[in-house]
Image 1 (spheres, one colour):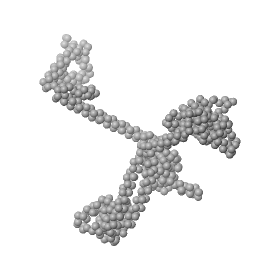
Image 2 (spheres, rainbow, N blue to C red):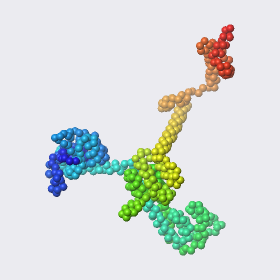
Image 3 (tube, rainbow, N blue to C red):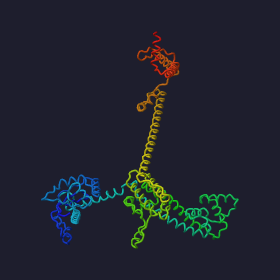
Amino acid sequence: MSGNLTHVLFENASGYALFEVTMQEEIAAKSKAVQEAIQDMSKFGKMVKLKSFLPFTSAGEALQNANDVSEGIISDQLSALLQLLLPSATKSQRILLGVGERTLASSIAQQLGINCDTGERTLEFVRGIRLHAEKLLAKAGTGMTSGDVKMAQLGLGHSYSRGKVKFNVNRSDNMIIQAIALADQLDKDVNTFAMRIREWYSWHFPELVKIVPSNPGQYARLVLLIGDKSGLTFDTSDEKYTSMVAAIQEILDDDETMAKNVMDAAKSSMGSDINEIDLINIKRFAERVVQLAGYRTSLRQYLVDKMNAVAPNLAALVGETIGARLISHAGSLTNLAKYPASTLQILGAEKALFRALKTKGNTPKYGLIYHSTFIGRAGNKHKGRISRFLANKCSIACRIDCFSDVPTNKYGEALRAQVEERLAFYETGAAVSKNSDAIAKAQAAIAASMDDDDEDADEEGDDAKMDDVAEAVKLVEQGQREAKETGQAVDPDLEKLKSLIPGVAAEVTTPKKSKKDKSKKRKSDVAALDASAMEVDAPGDLQPVNVESTSKRSKKDKSSKDKSAKDGETPSKKDKKKKRKSEA
C-alpha cells in the first residue's frame, strides 16, 4: 500500500511488540548502505522506537497465539493492543501498520479497519527488528535480559512442533505411509529370496520347482519338511508314506494329487546328492524366508486395520492397498484431500504426463488408480471415463475421511455403489442415482447404526444394573441370616444397602409367616371381600342389591348385558323398570 509506514507489528515467542517508525528510506531501500544500516544496531535503533510490548504470561498462551498468527486469527490480546495504541486515522495523520504475515494483515484490515502493508519495506523492518529484538526490548525497559528471547523461541518451537506432531494422533496417516513402503519392500525381498532358495535347492531336487506353484512361502516350507529327498523313498503301503503325503498336502492347500506327485518325483529325481552341512544352511535360509512371508501377511492385516481406522471410506471405495498408495504418494491424507479430482486421477503417472506435455502427445488417463478393479472391468473405450468418475469419488471419500469426526465407511460403500451403477450404465444404459440420493442413503445408514448401538448400550446397562441389584440382595439376605444365627444386630452397612434398594429391601426384610397365619389372612380377605360386595352403594336412586356370590354375579352381569344389547336399552333403564314393578 502506498504511503509511509507509521507502525510495525512484531510478533515473537515472548509477546507482541508494536514499534513506531521514525525514519525510513523507500527509494534507496535496496542499496548497500541501507542494508548495512539495518544490520547495525546503532543506526537501526534510530529508525524504529518501541511503543508498547505485551508479553505472554505462559507457554500455553504463547502457543495459542502462535497458532492464531499462523492461521490469520486476531486474538483478543492483539485486538485490544492495536485498538488502544493506534489512534484513529484522520486527514492530517494517516495510520499504516506493517505486518509480516499476509493472512494476519488482511484480518486486521477487515475486522479493525486499520490499513496494513506487507510489502518489501515492511519485511525489511521486520527482519531488522528480529535481528535486534533482544537489544531493542532490553533497551526499552521491558525487564528482559540476555538470552530470554532465545529461550522463549526454543520453548515455543518445541511446543509448536509437538502440537503439530500430536495432531489427530489416533488417525495418524504416517503409519500407513511407512507400512505400505515396508510391504512393497518385503514383496521384493521375499520374491528375491524365494528365487535364490529355488536355485540353491534345485541342485538336489530340481523337479520340485515344476510341481509346486510360484508361492515362495509354500516352497520354503516344503524344503524344510522334505530336507534330503532320499528320505521320501517309502512304499505306498507304509504308514510313513501316508503321513508324509498328509503333511505335504497340508502345505499345498489340501491338494492330494500334487502331494503324491511330489512323493513320486522324489523317488525318480535326477538331482545330485547333498551333504549334511549344505542341507543345514539351506534349511536356515528357508526358515528366514518362511518368517518373512508370515510377517508380510501380518503386515498386510495391520495395514487393513489402519486404513479402516484412518480412511475407511477410501478403503471401502478402492481397497486398502490402493488407498494406502495414494496417501503415501500424496504425503498425507490432508494433502490428498486438498488435491482436485483431476490431479488424483493421474497421481503416480507424473513421468508420462510431463513426457506427453513435452512431446505434445496424449496425456495419461490414470495413475495409481489403474490397479483398481473398476478400471479392469471397464471396456477399452470406457477406461478413461470410469477412471475420471472413480477419481471424483475418491476425492470425495478422502475429504470425508480427513474432516469427519467419527470414522465410518458408509459413505465409501455408497460411492462404491455409484461406481458400480456407472459401470452398468456404460454396458447396458441403466439409469444411475444422483450424488444427493447416495449421500442421503449413507446418512440414513449411519443414523440407523447409531440407534442400534444406543439400544445395545442401554440393554447392557440394564443387564448390569439387574446383576448389581441381585448381588446386593444376596448380600443383604446373607447378612440377615448370619445376624439371626448369631443373635446379633444387622451390620449398619447392610442397612444402608437396603435403603438404596427399597423395593427389594421390602421383600427381603419381610419376616416369613407360618402356614396358619397365611390361612387366617386368606379367610379374612375373603370375608372382607364378601362384606364389601354385599354393601355396595348404588349410584343415584338405586337401592343396594344383594349378591349371592362373585361367580353368580359375573354370570348375571353378562346375561343382563347381552339382553340389554338385544333390546337396545342400557342397564340403568332395566333397573328402573325392576324398581317400578317392585313398588307396584
